[in-house]
Image (cartoon, rainbow, N blue to C red; front, side):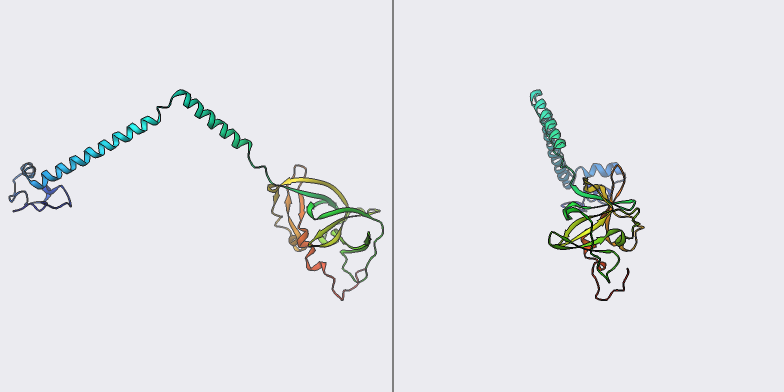
Length: 251
C-alpha cells in the first residue's frame, strides 16, 4: 500500500493517517514514525523543511546585523545629529503661525456694548440736525447732508430693541458701507478700535430671538467683558431696511 502523502504537498504529518506507512499498519505510533522516516516522501519534505529553516535563519541574522549597524554611529555624528534635531524643533516652535486677528470697532448701545468689523466703518460723525422723514419706521432716525451726500441714519437701539438709556445732547453715528451702499448707525458712544483673535469670536447666545438672532454674528470674548458682534451685511440687507410705499405714521 503506497503512502498517500507520496508526492502530496498538503501536509507533512502523514503518520497520523491510520493504515498507511509503506503498505503496512504498525502496532504502535513509535513503529509508525520509524517507518515514516524510511519513506521517500518524508525524507523529501524533511530536506525541504531544513533548507527553508536555514534560509529563514540566514535572513534573520542579516537583519540583526543591519539593525545593530544603525546604532554604530560615531560620537561626533551623534552630537551633530542631536544638535540638528534641536535646532529644527526650536525653529518649528518659533515659527508658529500667529493667530489670525480681526479688527473691530466697539460702541455703546444703552447699557450694552456692541461691535462691528472695522472694514465696514468709514468714519465717525457727530450730528446736530437730523431731517426726520414722515411715514417711515421708527428705527429710521432720518437723513442728513454729509458733504453733499444724502445719508440715511439708522437708530440701532430702535432696530435691535435695546433700551437707549440717558439721552445725549448730540447724536453720534458710525458711517458704514456695505456693497456700495452707505448708512449711518446711530449709537450712544463710540469706544475703541481693538484687534481680537478669530478664536475669541464664538457663536451667539441661543436665547436670542427675532431681529437680534438674525443680525448678531457672535460674541467676542475679551478680558474685560464680552462684546456683541453685529453682522452689518445681514443687517443692511434685512427686510426692515426697506421702506414700504405705504407705512402707518409712527410719530
